[in-house]
Image (cartoon, rainbow, N blue to C red; front, side, top):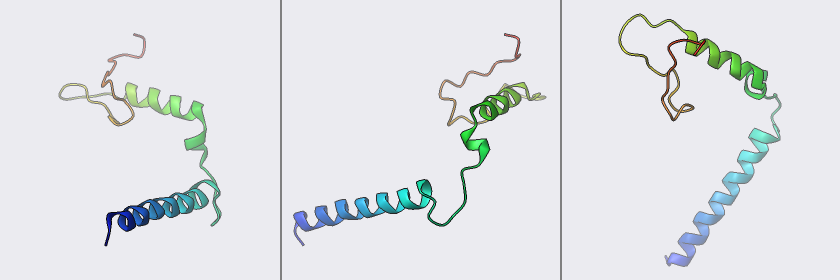
Length: 80
């Protein structure tokens, strides 16, 4: 196979994958809805506040979700 055929097949498969992802995830062709825990900003802030206030009993402070918190700053107290 030539490189042109391989490259065009790869780009075509990415396009098809994007279309199916859009239809299934965003347009919800199989039904369902986006949960309020994902779409509600107040819920996210309340959850973050709760996770920061969680008491730690042993070891140094750790981050509950390091993926969403790239700076890795953990506050010892909410009043700070």
